Length: 153
Image (cartoon, rainbow, N blue to C red):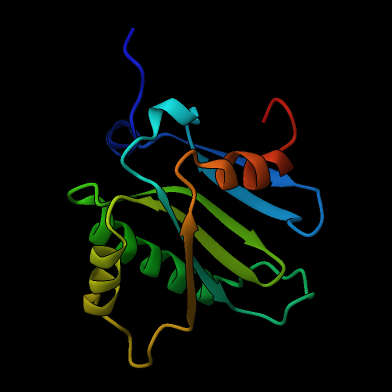
């Protein structure tokens, strides 16, 4: 049996959904499976997080249908921009406390920035915040995001 790679995650496109009960991440987590181990993620050393706040922090609000549709359209555009040639892989989507966060890992942060700038926009620019950090073993995904997922989820 061969081991999975980040590109295999994109091809297989398998997801799990869990509710997180651990503050401050109480909410819904959708994540790609299988969860790769550190030796399987070579070549994707940078974690890129995209945050869209749709309600006041501390509200614990899940998105209403119109907002949910906007978030889904935005996610589709991000995935189309990044995964067409595997420049980045979406590993998790967190919906919590009035915000949604997409967690990508990338091989080329400059290309990701260019692609976000070139993405189609709505009438107003997307209300997003972006940050990135070096995480060559994908510890953020495993140790912070998935650590809040109940066992067996």
